Every structure is written in structure tokens, then in C-alpha cells.
Image 1 (cartoon, rainbow, N blue to C red):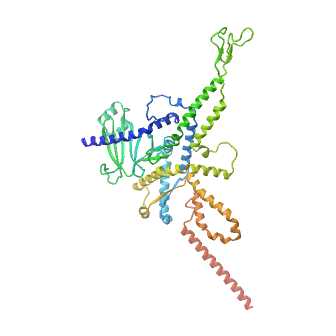
Image 2: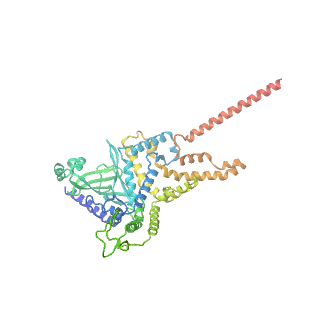
Image 3: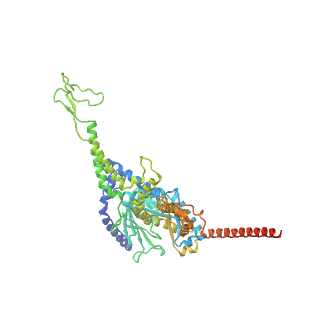
Length: 529
């Protein structure tokens, strides 16, 4: 028991250290939640139930719409559930042509896509929440739970619960998650392993909440998992009662942590909302001022004479103001001319709203109402958006999607659901190729450039057809099929193409031999005559 208390003390001490280090950016997260997110969580303040003070600060929804546009673009462009958004292949291109390996990797990809698209795994909805967190705050967290009986389950964890640390290579390998669970939930998950006070609360008031700390760290000489094959240790600690609930481990970390963008010295990174926060606060203040000015102009204060007007003044439609004019017809009630020019305010507001949209690439991603564009103009707009989103897409693929797919592949491989794994797959490395709409647009640029080159070189080819000998058109055809995401089973393997051409050459030789024999027979018959 003393050993457990010592272990709990070590984890709580490190948690307090990670919490104090994160405190420097929580103020910014709180400002984002107050000014840019109508339903955001609290980081440095607490609110009572029904408190809507946050929404009263938001007078302009430009940033909320911009966030939704960018999140939707990333969701549909990278992980569109209606497309096969990734492929598996061997790093050695020769091995990828092996029919057995190709069939196995295709089967594995389809199996994983079924998992991602399954309603029981809840990936599409949880993935959207992770992307929302990335765009709003900077970091995002996805919990991958592997239940042998119920299957894989994905859960988006709000960043307010997560405290992280990086290894020497900038990869997040340590996660401390502090969250609340009811006594009922704790007993359902851990049974009699929970503290006695939790068991008592479960009997009397099962909705009583307790604070739980989940620690996930790489195994070390200090912390070893029960299963020696596990690479990560796992501890669940009841902070309220200072008791150790469970000790376990994982082959891969269950928490996938991604950052929208970051500097080398940062752990949590930052978001476009973070960058545009000063402009958002300014726009909210400007919108509030313009609304008040418009109210004054639409319903201005009334100037009343100090004598002769009967109160109260009925300043409403069809209202009657007794004494509003004198006997000689002079008005005793007049509206106050507040002055001001709403057009100037609206023009300035529009400029700042455009700055916010530009921070989220809205005008590049969304074709708003306007003049019709040619196909070339549309492609140019798409290429411009891709140039801006390139670093973001690369980071999301490296930090988020690649570890996620690799983890699901490993889970299925260990469970035997993929069947027999070819020995060459075990001995060599595989890689993930992203073929969603956005990555494919990037590849299609290369295809478009080749087409432009062929168009430019067509005059030379007409003058001298042998000019084509400078180019391997077979390789070009395969690259274009790859860039356009043509079905893999439609494109024949190189070996099959070679066999077909060899058979065609043999058939052509046989045809030529037959024609020669016929010609020789004809000549002989003529000579004999």
C-alpha cells in the first residue's frame, strides 16, 4: 500500500508540473472560448448551469462560420467517408506489384475503412470534433479504445482534460488526462477495484462525481507494464480518494495528439483562431457599436419642451402625444439628430471580416456568388488554396492520420482479423498513401503539367514522331492513373502488360509468317504456270 501511495504521489507531482506549464496558454484558450466559440469549455473560469454570459460577448459570427468552413473542408478533403481516402503499399515498389501482397494490403485497407465508417466506432463524428479542436485551439486529441468483444471505439477528448509532454523528436508520447466520472461509471468499468467511498456512493447516490487521472507514458526502468510486450504503461488514479484503481499497458498509445501548427519550442501549438483573436475581438466591439448607432438612428431620443407636454409620451406606432404641438403649430416634440455615418463603420467592419475569413482560407475554399469562372480559373483557385493549406495538410497526415491508421492496422494484425500476413509484409515496411480529395488535387497538378507539356510539344511530335522516344509513356500513363485515383484493380501489373505485349508480338510474327507463306505460294503457282 505504501508503494502505491508513493507511486500516486509521483504521478500527481508530475501532473501538477504539466498543469503549471500549460497555465501560460490557458488564458488565450479561455479568450478563444469566450469570443469565438459559442459552446466552448472553460479553462480558467467556471460557470453555473444556464449561464449564457459567453454568448452575450459575441456580436459577429464571422469567425464561427469561418471555423466551420475550414473544419468541413479538412473533414471532406482528408477523411471523406464516401471515398477510399488512403491506400496501403510497400515502400519497395517491386513488392507492391506482388499479387499476394497487393491483395493483402487491399483487404487490410478495406477492413480499416469499414471500421472508420462504422456507426459503432463513431469515427466520423469524433473526427469532426478533433478537427474542430485543432482549428479552434491548436491541439486535438482522439482516444482509440480497443474492445475485443465490441470492436474499436473512437472518442474525441476535449483539450481542457489533456496535459502532454514531447520526446526528444517532438512527438507527444506522454499524456496525463484528468476528468470526472460518476460512481456508477467507475463501478461499471473497474468493479471492486474502486475505493470504498466510491462503492458507498454507488449504493446511495450513483451520480456522485469523482476526479480520475489517467497516466500514459512510455515504459522505462522506472515504470514497467505487466505485459512485457507493451510499449506504454497505463495507470488510472482516483484523485479524490488518492487511490490506485488499475495498472495496465498498451502496444501503442491510445491517445492520438495532433497540432494544427506549432513552433519548435511549443508543446500544444496554436490555431488560426489564436492568430486572428485580436481581430475577432475588434470586430465584436465594432459590431456592438454599429448596432447601438443603428438603434439610435432608427429610434432616436426625443427632445421635449419643458412645458405643455403631457407625460408619459406615447412614442410608439399610433401613439398620441398630448401637447406635442403648440397652438400656433410649433412642434414641442422632436427627434434628436445623433449624426454618425453607418456606411463608414460597415465598410471598415467588412475589411476586418475579410481578414478573419482569409485567416481560415474561406475565400479560397468556398466559391461565393459572383461571375462565372472558366475551368482554368477554378483550377487556379484550387491550386492557390492547396498552396496555403499544404503545411497544415502535411502536419495532419504526419501527426494525426498516419499514427491513427498504423494503430488500427496493428490492432487488426494482432487480433488475427486480417488473416495470414505475407512474410514479406512482416519483413519489410509498408507506407500509407493518402488519396482523399485534397491530396489527389495536389497529385493532379503534376498530371496537368504533363498534359500542358504534351500540348506544347505536339508540334514537334508532328514534325518528328520519334521525339516521343524521349519519354516513357508507360510510366506516364501509370502516374496519371495514380494521380486521378483510378481503381487499382483496373490497372494491370507490369508483368501482365509484358506478357500481353509478348503474346501480341508473337501473334504479329505468326501473321507475318503466314502472309509470307501465302505470298511465296502465290509466286510459286505463277512461276509454275
